[in-house]
Length: 302
Picture 1 (cartoon, rainbow, N blue to C red):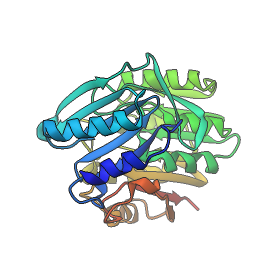
Picture 2: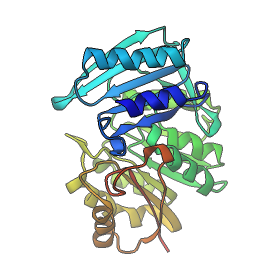
Picture 3: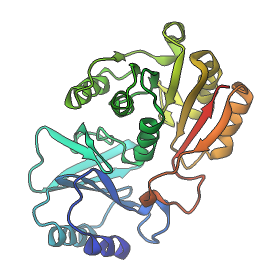
Picture 4: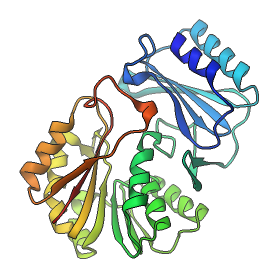
């Protein structure tokens, strides 16, 4: 736990943008593999992926309050079987709680730290969003699959996309996505489809072709997507969805499947696509193995 305490003690003022401050999950801090600390200004979120002793929680809390005495903070414990306990430990969270993203200060997203495991903005995808912002050309048409709260859509429209189609089974997440577009003044050009993607290929294909298709599915979500069988079904459809020269951004976030899995799926089921690059993860997410961390791969249709 000392590595986390050292990071807290050495930190500057609370950052103005949402970002991860400590990533024990990468395995580079022995004894802290179960701990992460995130900033969702003005609040902090401490997450433990195993039960945390009262003494350890108290020590971390004391360090947080000593370094950032005005910051409200939340503790979430995630355990096997999907059990989640979330507590507001100090202060009061803003309502609504709106954050910008570190490095992209002109973005605004609605987040919620006291509900569920997903808080409205996946901080590890920061470089993926930056990549989209840099790659999208004015007038582009974008398909955002597994859109969640539509952060990719916001940055694509800010970059000049003419249209972004956001598709996700969760209508509640898309409702937050609509709010995110309103917060950023990019409502025009955004569409929201609360559909099962695998039952909607005809509609999505007729709406194309697209200059960019973003695929950021859950790695394992019963009834929605299981990467080991469903990524192949997804890859098969990509060539028909893309315009010539169009790009696909394929994301996979599980330590159980490495780069070879994703490359192999594309090679077998979408051989027309040419690999372009792996988008680097934010530096704070460094991992003992490049295969364990988030994989974000860009492909192009010649």
